Amino acid sequence: MKAFLIDLDKCVGCYDCQIGCKDEHCGNDWTPYAKPQPDTGQFWMRLVETEHGARPHVKVSYVPTMCQHCADAPCAAACPKDAFQIREDGLVLLLPEKCDGCGACLDACPYNAIFLNEDLKIAQKCTGCAHLIDRGYPISTPRCVDNCHMDVIQYAEESELDLTNTERLHPEFGLQTRVYYRGLPKTFVAGKVYDPEIEEVIIGGRVTLRTDGNSYTARTDAFGDFWLRDVAPGEYTLVIQGGTKRYEQQLTVGDKSIGLGNIPVA
Image 1 (cartoon, rainbow, N blue to C red):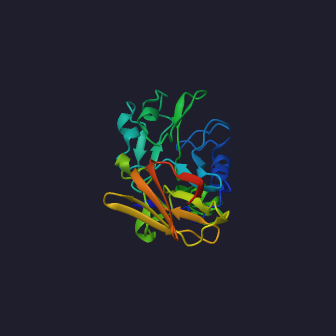
Image 2 (cartoon, rainbow, N blue to C red):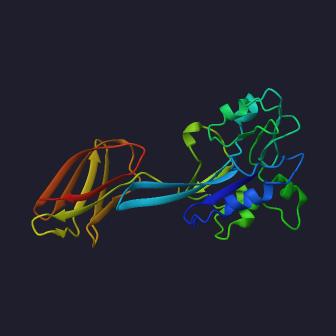
Image 3 (cartoon, rainbow, N blue to C red):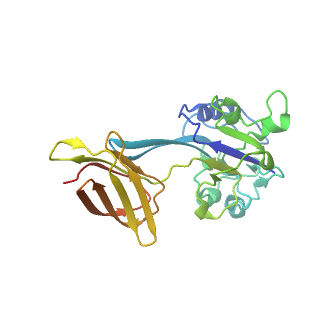
């Protein structure tokens, strides 16, 4: 069984994966695998670029997002025309010759990875470039993999991939997907600590974010900045200790990162 591994720690946001997918499928008829992808309105592979936090404490994440090729694909279960094929290698294909464009699969896909081609009156999605894989030489890998110059995306037997510290996209969906990610963005709390009396940043200040049974700590760096990473949602007390000075604030952490900006500790 094959799988994709997408290492976000290597991704530079160049969009090569997205561009390669468009180049491979726009204007090209790969029947029986897929009809041509429209020039606009569909991204079978799309690079999701997101800003986290608030200036000046901002991180930008780049997440190549595609059909996750679920083992128990909800799109296939929802299709009344039996237009989906789950291959032995794990790829989930949407066969254009069987599809009538009813849209049931679009509603069933929690990843929003299926699109409706109104001109052809069919649904379309990533095929994993099965037409290239089945053809073999000279190219036997998905185009997004071949087009990535940073080696961010790998496609191989699952047993051959290093899946250390990887996770699935939206594991809360409970789907056994064939796409693994390393370095998915996590919620952080960040800020800059300074002493308003002397108008200087506080270096080496101790920052603690705590709640019952959970605590995160960090030290302010040479610029007075701190970063508390991988913070779980909840109600917290933020405590900053800089020498004899102390700051305390109640803080609600949700699913979005928080940039607190400049924090005076008096």
